[in-house]
Structure formats: C-alpha cells, structure tokens
Image 1 (cartoon, rainbow over the protein chains, first blue to last red):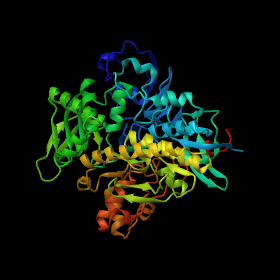
Image 2 (cartoon, rainbow over the protein chains, first blue to last red; image 1 turned 90 degrees about the vertical axis):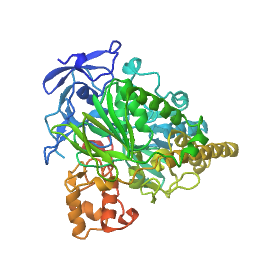
Image 3 (tube, chains in turn orange, red; image 1 turned 30 degrees about the vertical axis):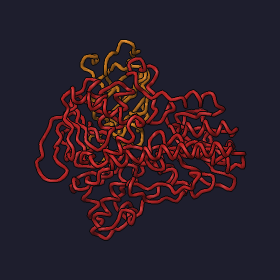
Image 4 (cartoon, chains in turn red, blue; image 1 turned 135 degrees about the vertical axis):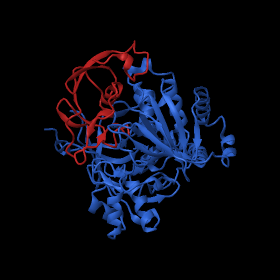
Length: 101
Length: 457
C-alpha cells in the first residue's frame, strides 16, 4: 500500500474518507470523491494503458471525458474513462488490458 | 414511445443552467440533460462534496445552482446525448445514462449548451503520459486536490496559464516555467485598462502573477514547448522561442498545454445545423439568428459551443435562447425582458472581445510537426501518413479520413479534426475553410451497443 507522504495529493488529507481499491491486483488507498484517474496519478502512475497498434503509453489528457485516452478496465468493464469515473470502495481497476480500439 | 417535453437543454454549464432557469420561469416544461454527475460544466465545476473541505476557498459558487434547484426543471445527470434527430413534431433526443434514465425524449424545442474543450495543440511527444491540457490540470488541482506532477511546465497562450500556475504553486508543485507563444500584449494593454475592475479574470491574473514572482517562476513570451521526450511518460521538455533557434532541455514530469478552447460543435453538426468557419475562433461555429436559433427551427445553441465567449456571455446567451424557445412555442415573451437580456449580452460580449484581443490563439504550432508526430490520437495516425495522402491527391478532410481513418476513432475527430484540417490546408496552400470538415455520425459519443436501444434490456 502506498503511503500518503509519497503521494501527489495536496494536503490536508485529514478530513477525507479513506477507502481501498485494487489497481492491477494490488491494494491502493483512495479517498471518497476521487476519480480513478486521481487515484492512479496520486500513486505516481501516469500510464493508464498502452495502445493496440503501437503499444504506446497513454494517460490522462483532456480530463473532461472527451478524448478517450485515459481508458482503463473497471470491475471487468473495458474502456472506462478514468478521468470522469468516481472510485468506490473495493473497485477493481486494471491498466494492463490494453484496448480494442 | 418517447417522453414528450417542451424544451430539452443539453449541458448544465453556465449557458444550460441559465437557459433552464429562464425557460422554467416562463412556464415551459424543461428537461436539463448533463453528462457529469454534478451540474456546473467546466466553468462552474463543483468539487465532489467529499473533497470540498480540502478545496481552497475559491471554486465558483453560482446562484444558478439554487435557482435551478428551486425552478421546475427536471435534471438528468450523468447522461450522454449521443444523437439528435429532427422529426415532424420536434426533435428526437437519444440518451444513454444510468439505469432508469429515459433513452429517448421528444422535445418541441432544444437548447444546446455543449460548451468547449481545450484546443488540441499537437507537437512531437504530445501523446506521452504526463502531457495534458491545462483544463485537465486545473480540474485535477482545484477539484480533485491532486498534482499532475512535481515539476510542471506550462506552454500555450493566455491568462488561464497564469491561473493554473498559481494553483500548482499553491498546491506544492514546482512550475519550471510558463511559456506563452504570443508576444507580450503591449498593443492591447489599453483595452485591458479600460476593462479593469469589471473583468474578474484580469484580477485573477494579477494575483497569479504575484504568486509566480514569489515562487521565482519564469514567464517567457514568444516561447513554447517543441518536443516532449520520455520512455513510459514525459521526462524532458525541449523548449525554445517560437521562431529561431536556441532550444534548451528541461527535466519535467508533467507538461500542461493551454492554447485556449474550441467549441463542442459535434451535436449541432450531427443534428444537421449549418455552420460557418470563424477565423477569429479558428473553428467552425453554428449559424444562428438573433434568437440564437440555428438553421433548424426550434434548435438553439448558446454559450461556448457556438464560439468561445466565457461564462458570462454563456449565461446571457442561455437566457436569450430560452426566450427564443418560448417564442417558438408561441408563449408570451415579455418584451422588456428580451430587451434587458439583449442589452446585458451585448455588454458581456464587449468584455469578451477585449480578452480575445489580448490573447489571440497562436497560429505558430504547425511548424513544430514532424512526420512522426501523431495527429489522430485515437487511431494513431501520424503527420507523415497524412502528408502521403496529400501527395496522392487528397484535398479534403473527408478524403484524408477515408484513406487514413484519422478522425474515425472514439473521440470522433474532436482532438484531430482541427489540426488535420490546418495541416491539410497548409500543405495544399488553401484556406482552412476550403478543405471542409468531418461530419460526426451518431453516436457522437461512444455508447455500448445495448445503450443504443430504445429500452433498457
């Protein structure tokens, strides 16, 4: 589990409600109200997927749900936009699936 | 059978909220459809309540939230509008949202308030993770309370960059530099003084400037990022003057691109509204009459989706479009109210014109493109591949699209449409409006196949 001192979250974190999600099989701490993209960025993860054709890394780009670059697999559902999807306790996030674009 | 309603407003930013409130006040049955969990759009984006304590004092509280809650407006959140089809008795609106959301609405009138998104500004390496739009970075810092990186470079044009720099510095990031591709706006400075005190963003810009001074952040005019490099994510930025040599390399873990905004025109185009190329906006905008009605009677467009004017222009356009819809429905429209709304809209448009004067979109970006630069992010189509189709005789955006698939991916050309058109126009020596544009096909947003059905399965 990543601890908060190495995170990119802006303090204070005291009033936030912690919850645990899974990222690529590992438990990761998140906070209520965060998006999937925020949780990934907070632990230093910038690459959310690799493209089908050239296996190029991709991450968050537009941050508002229109570019479809930040796609991840959430609870088995592929191609979910990380930047506009709020996390929930126990959510299973996978960045290894690639995309069938 | 689709549900029937008098007015559907698409988008709950400043234009859509104001349109809904105004229309409800005139007694119209209004449904307001929005793609996000909470209304506000980008200008009035709300911090999730669970993170609100940690957020700064700023945010953008607006009376419109309370007004729309009190008004008789049906709000349908977290729901995409993927198609609009004119029919004999109105417009068929196709929705996809959480279970229980209607899949179809039949609206007698429609106000589109789709807003805008950050103008895509391709350069070599812009697909590397860590390179993102200024709007994305601002939303992360302000509303998610997370930094996009520890050493951040800002490159683009205009005042939003200064606002972003301030939020990043206050949040604990090191802003290595803010690059503005335009020269310092000396010539427009008098305009700015004329609007002083009335234009809150200038005041915000001044506060940002002081924060940057304290942090020792350099603001460099006529400079931009030329290339991003890194393995799995951005590690270095090559920066330099817009014209001439003198490039240098800086270590970064994030680059934010702030080249202004471009209207979301996809729904209006898909519905069949005529549009025109606006050279000041460097974008196509829907053709509208004095009621903001498009060439499809009963369908209106308000706010940044019809040309970037900012949140205040957007609100008054929303109100005017609502009055226009009421008029179209043969409701009594108070002439005093129409006159007041038109007057305030004209005033807000004058202020917006000052800002456009001060910070025009930069036109220098094309010179950065190399043959291996990806233009179409979805289909991974490079400048070189597009140049080959031009060598083979392509002279229109549609021809380029058919050969290369550029613009046929998930984003439906939102990211690459403008840059590909500008590249094509440059290469064949034509004005950009001569190469045409790509018409989005429904669904204009990707929706699961099941989601296209009229009823939930």
